[in-house]
Length: 144
Image (cartoon, rainbow, N blue to C red; front, side, top):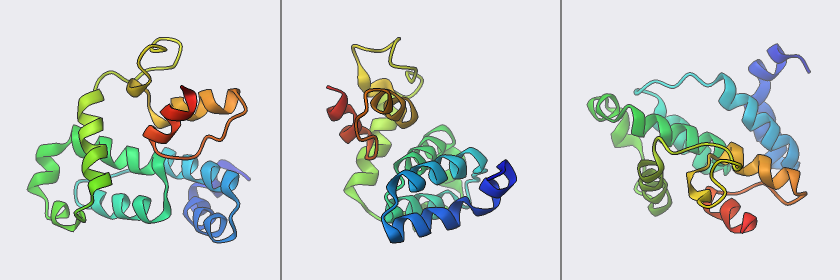
């Protein structure tokens, strides 16, 4: 597929891969979707809800990172009221705040894996031949 195809069809591929249980395709499509994602305060809740529904942890991390980095703008928008009350979302927002400005790659942060992005955690797990799907907490547990 071309880059344009990924840009135009990644969300459709996420849904098809999820429906038919093709996890690796879902993860690749999610990565492409996030690469082209242009969030705004008005639509970040929609992205977060979709990511939660589809178990797209990279997308969820991107939405939460956007909320944390643009908190004043998100609070000023009506979008914040659309974010459902969810313990996992609240925990991940707090996790993002706690690790803000500390993300890097495994080589630089081997002592504290909580500072790593989902992308960096997935890369490390993939290199070790391990399952690389899951939340940041799940991925960190697998690496330990």
